Amino acid sequence: MTFDIEKLIDNALAAKANAYAPYSKFKVGAAILLKNGKYILGCNIENKSYSMTMCAERCALFKLISECYTRDDVVAICVVANSDNPVTPCGACREVMDELLYPDTPVILSNNNRDRIVTTVKELLPLSFKLER
Ligand code: THU
Image 1 (tube, rainbow, N blue to C red):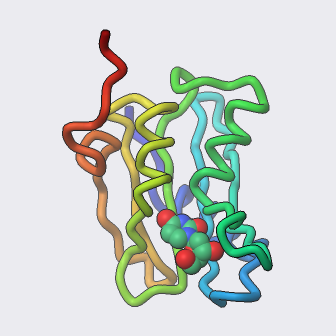
Image 2: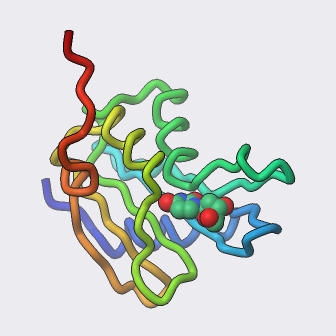
């Protein structure tokens, strides 16, 4: 499915403005484009107990589910940070993408300069764990 990648990056950059990152100072934004044209936004939310921190991607993905959407509604997801290179998701976020999105869902990694890597869920987590009995 074709989509406006610039607008998706715009939305992720806008989401980054809400980041709460007083400890790392590393602000991250994420945006999920839905087939109905809406965007679900997420940002990183840190905590004084550091391990309680929520990443931007998981914030957006959990909002997706809590707002009653599923992977079938998703066109693409984008994540951006104030980084020299496009930000690459942590392992936990890759697992959650693998759980909640389709393997071929496009994942756009970007930054303030709008540099970009266009990848997919399965490229980010090859040989992912499958619950097979
Ligand atoms: N962070 C994200 O939001 N997404 C990632 O994929 C990597 C890391 C956040 C967590 C923390 O608030 C800050 O970036 C520094 O690790």
